[in-house]
Image 1 (tube, rainbow, N blue to C red):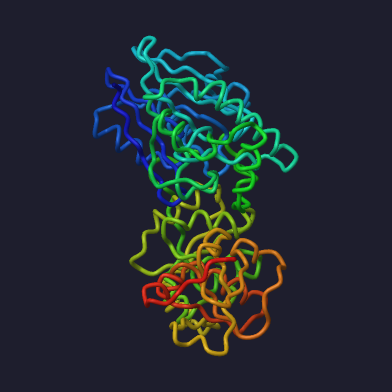
Image 2: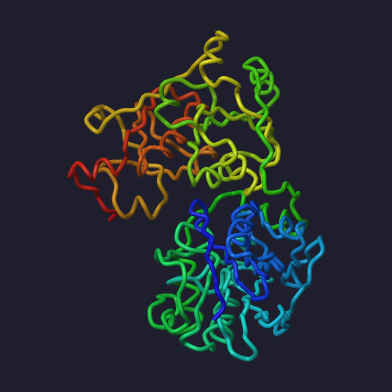
Length: 450
């Protein structure tokens, strides 16, 4: 059995895989943009990365295949993807000889039109299936990321891909999906990352659908919203992203007056500090997106990619992590960071805004606005709260008038929402510290949607 190592992106909910091919050579399946984790994992095993394989044109992250190709890897990809950089295109049934092991391409359209799954073979013996977005753990990947008029057709194609190609493979075959729990490319899924064909036949609710029509209805009925950056990254990946290397470019240090000039010229200021620091004082109009694993998702969902970005950080925060997260969702115009942070801004006599954090006992007289995803709200929310998803706040959706207390699971997304509402001129907004988690931990009842 080949040694297969999963490399997980917790923030996006995706897995890439490093395969030891023998002879000191390695294959990476569906790498994300930062080559560092793959190079490090390969170095620990004394492997040279000889191949990288793409199952499809990704919508949720910038591919790292071009980065690995710059270091000598051969790119394997669907022939119908139309990549505009050097690669070997594979069609249905074609095999790539990897020197001892081989990789057979299986056309599995559905999640995307060009989608391939890859069957890893030792001679004629199947070792593993890299299923990309076709078969997931307890789910399948969504089919609505191309265009609304193709969603149903792709769902029907996915039914056929599963039943004619994937589920005909041996029940004990190990399956390594790209998308997993936490990925917006996925229909609802469990927390496990790998599975087998037999286990999915037995336990996957979508595979229990009795026919194609029932499958399509069940799949489409479970789809929620997704980040708007998904609509542009397929084309970025088709054309081939810029190669940055293993060390991300540093953030330039910008004096307060330079930041003020950039903002006047249309730059976006993203305050990535912890929400308590943002609450205590921030640049008016700044968007709060705390630096954590999910920063890339909310940056991509809420911020246009055609404006220069200025960041506000605390001294002890990881600049390299921030840059990597911005780059992996396609943000190239990183103008820099406020040198000296908010202390320098205030010392320069520039204006400061504040957004209060409040406790659970300070909600009297305030309407509670829950900005979590639909499924989270339906599972349980503060009694009497109203619901608008965070991603919808970039549009002119109706928000209740009067004094608001914004809530999410812990507080980070609620502060993002409060900063968006402040841009609308709302000055009567607070954020519930600890969110619904604190409410539940205090022994208070969360009300399910009826």
